[in-house]
Every structure is written in C-alpha cells, then in structure tokens.
Length: 160
Image 1 (tube, rainbow, N blue to C red):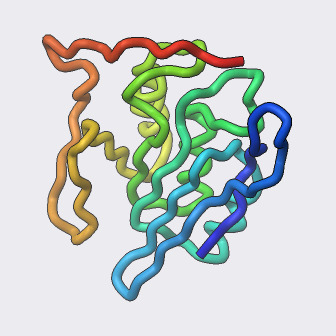
Image 2 (cartoon, rainbow, N blue to C red):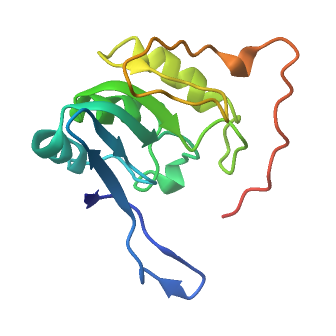
C-alpha cells in the first residue's frame, strides 16, 4: 500500500513532476512500514491509526539539515514517528554510510540510540549488509559504528 510522504521531487528545472511515497506491507503475520525520504508530519499518526500497529518500521533518520527540515527527519522526529506508527521495532534509514548533510556520518545512529530510551520500540541497527529477520527469532544489533578499528567511510561532497 502506498502512503503519503513529505518531500519535494526533481532536480534542476524539473520540479515536482514525480511523487515521493512510503509503503505499508501487510501479511497475515506481519505489518511493515518503510517511510522513504520524508519529513515529519501528521501523516505518520494517520498511517499508524489506519494501518498500525507495525512490527517493524524503517524511517528516514539521516541527511538532515535545517534547510531540509520539511523533507528529512532527525533522530528525535524519527523516534516520534515510530511512536506515531505504534512500532514494535524501528530501524533508522538513510544512515551509516556517508553524509550528504553537515553532520557526522554516525551522528544519526548516536542520536537514535539516545532517543530510543525515551520510547517503547526496540531500536534495530544492523550493520550494512546484515539481515533483519522478521520471523520472531531473537536478534541482537550492536553499535557497529563504534567498533574498535572501524574506519569511517569517506565523506562524500555535499550538495546545496
């Protein structure tokens, strides 16, 4: 199911010709939500009301900046969105590889960890490439971004 997202579209001279959306995936056993790129807004509470509670949500939680406040969420907004969606587990998206925004590449993960203590969801932070199992098996996700010897990825050039 396609759901609303809060984001503009387009590059250069082709503005807002396409839509940005989120996705609800439902089966008899699970309810999942993927926000895509989206700023925080009342649409998360509406999605939670109509389709939740969710077993797992992946929410935009990185590449934030005051200039993009309406189209990307920071950790605190993503935490609130996870609560609005009545999520059991939350995985930050748009994080952990490089930063296009003026924050450190690992800042969203650090802030998400702090924010999770204020909410009722489990924070799942798999290292890139690590599978997430949605079949009820026990899983543990550590703070891989702090691992000894972990080399931060190279910083990409940001765009304005």
